Each structure stands twice: as structure tokens, then as C-alpha cells.
Amino acid sequence: MARVIVDVMLKPEILDAQGQAIARALPRLGFSAVASVRQGKRFEVELDGPVDDAALADVRKMAETLLANTVIEDYTVTVERAES
Amino acid sequence: MARVIVDVMLKPEILDAQGQAIARALPRLGFSAVASVRQGKRFEVELDGPVDDAALADVRKMAETLLANTVIEDYTVTVERAES
Image (cartoon, rainbow over all chains, first blue to last red):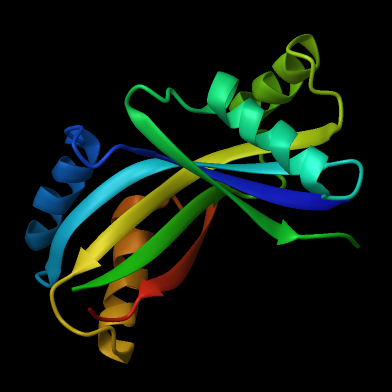
């Protein structure tokens, strides 16, 4: 089994209200060195077969059609563990 | 500015209903090679200063007190970009 990670983040030009709320809460909790926070989603996808080009193309299509809203979000696909 | 990533995922023994819903939707969309999906959160934290041990300890404390619910969630801290 192989594991592929899909990270989905709001595009930089889209206001991230959740991230801003976190960034604003941090000084109150005693953390002062944080310039900004952005919050997104992480998907751990376990694949049955090997991670070849076809499988990665499938995951990318999955990200585009189901996991991310590409109008407002960017996604990145990373192979975490090729086979075991 | 340095960027630190905090990934927060439900512990393996906790039911991930969102991930299951995604995994169940995939065959309907034509993706058959997926064994399971787990969904979590990703935080991109921009730090003002350098990423030294003290800063990383701070981010870990942040994760424990604000970003993750450690009763049901695990978190990992990764340095994405040390300085620029």
C-alpha cells in the first residue's frame, strides 16, 4: 500500500478568515513571533496499487474534481510512502 | 521569514467520517484504486524570527494548546523554509 498526500490551501489572494482568527488569538495566548497563519486541508490517500504515473494522474484528477475547489483553492500532491 | 507547517490528523483509532465519505464517493466518480482516505488540517505558520529550537518549541506548544485537540488528534511540526 502506498500513501499519497493531497494538501489543499486557499489561494494566496483569497481571504483566510480561519487563519486570521488563529493568528489573532496567538498573542493572547503568549505567542508573539507569528507573522501569519493560513489554514487548509490535508488528505491522506491510501492507494492499493503502486504509485506510478497513472496513479498520480488519478490522484491529481481526484483533487481537482472532489478534494479541492480550484476556483479558490490550490492543491499539491506528494508521495509519502511509495510501497511497503 | 520562516515557514513552519503543522499537520493535524485524527488519531488512527478515531473514526474519520469525512474521510470515509470521500473514500465512498470516489468509486462513483470512477476512481477505484483507493483503499482509504483520512482528512485532517494543515496550518502554515509564518514566523518573524529564525527557526531555532525555542521557536519550534513555541510552535509545538501552539499546536498543543490551540491547533490540535490532543485527546483525539495527533500533530506533526515540519520546517518548510528556514529563512529567506
